[in-house]
Figure (cartoon, helix red, strand yellow):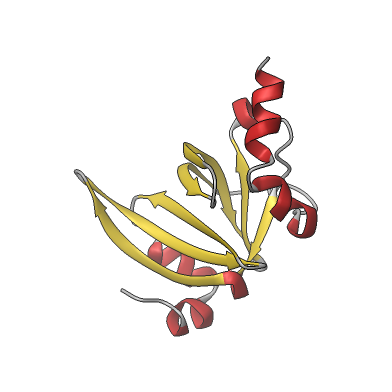
Length: 130
């Protein structure tokens, strides 16, 4: 039953992006967990893992959603803005992306804006609103 649910969720946005932007592999290294993501017709609340690479941000759901959800590479050129936002009692870094006219928002917990800039300082300096 859960496989069917994961398939239906994936078809609402993830599968469309993965068709043209699938990461060749999941990176090894510093993983940012507990990330939330919104796609036009669905969202993943705290269920996304991300890795910052030279090419961009690789996102992949946690194990419960992994079926039908291959890793996606969001190239740095697709990042439209990144800014710290207050969320209840903590801060999040909101990263807004546009990939093939599909808007994706990533909500990264903590203070990771400096980590994002370290991986792509030019793009995030030029395109970032604070």
